[in-house]
Length: 203
Length: 203
DNA sequence: ATATTTGTCAACCATATGGTTAAACTGAAT
DNA sequence: ATTCAGTTTAACCATATGGTTGACAAATAT
Image 1: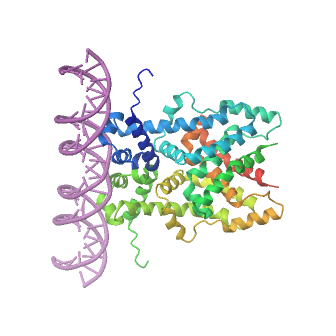
Image 2: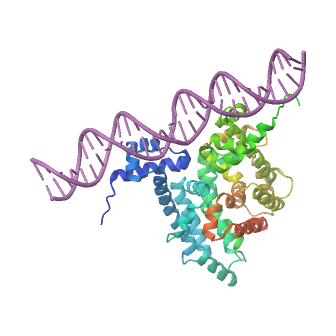
Image 3: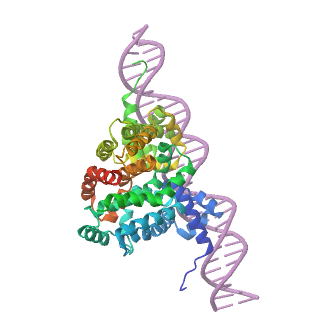
């Protein structure tokens, strides 16, 4: 503890802002609503975070920092590709079930402002595919996997895991199920998705 | 032509609104910006569409009506599952490459207002999974496909095809490629994705 | 005890924004 | 030429919104 005030209020604000921003997005969120959510005066938001933009960025970075390690686990772990896929699929779905707004929030805001991702890229710990690429090539050469481009496989893994959360209203409507059935479907995907992928790529 | 004015201005407005709403979303869009985009007085927007909400709904329904038939092709066509998957994957990616904002827009706005999907569900031509379900069960019984739940397969098909467009800024950053390389990657997916799915489900 | 910094609040401000109005223009029908 | 419905515009309006200020309280330091 060198200097960290870490005032309680500051944390309460960030927490309230998280809820509001993740529900409504930057454009839909109102400073007053965040203040109400935090049960605090609106001026406090500016006292601690200066502006809506900066408060938003604090929330965003926070959210991103939560997601990045999840993805790094599949990109940089030491286990075999199959193990990684099984672990990731199960862990990721568990994780997001606890934070269902996270992926939608990040994807939505990144689309709104694509330059934003450049700032993230600077940071250490930003997910990078290089190591994964090498591993895939090795396992293909060893005959464990069928030939596939690491990039495509990675996109597929992300897509199969993340998409259901991002598109849940659409899926619920098309498949014609309620929240409860959807939850079950997602729960089943913890193994379904891994099997689906492995099935496809195993030699 | 019973009564259809279909005034040119009305169309110009809808077109401008499409561009602005699909870029910025309902909350981020400004009526003035739409008016500027249409090179027209702001009052015209209200003259033809009454309110921002109604103009937005016109745009949204329009967008949805464009997407729905694409999905129906995989749900209701007469061809075999494998054919459907190959056709859909190729057609859908071609289609969206021409309208890259469509899926993001629809998903984003549906998340903002999940009740909205209920109104869509009423309409005829709303994608429905029932027929597809039966077909999958038949092909499984015939030994053409490995056992899989139709719902999960459908989600997987949607995910693999749609996700790259929705999450493009994220993917470009992780895979570390520029717009051109991303385009190529997506182009490759026209066959890659179909192969990936078929590989996994074929008995 | 006193001064100083830090935190909190109600009231306020400038501007942006969705929406309205009343007048003017247009072009076809009479 | 006049009328009239439909169209277009500039000027407005009410409200919402991000942000600021100055007074005051509560810690913290001297």
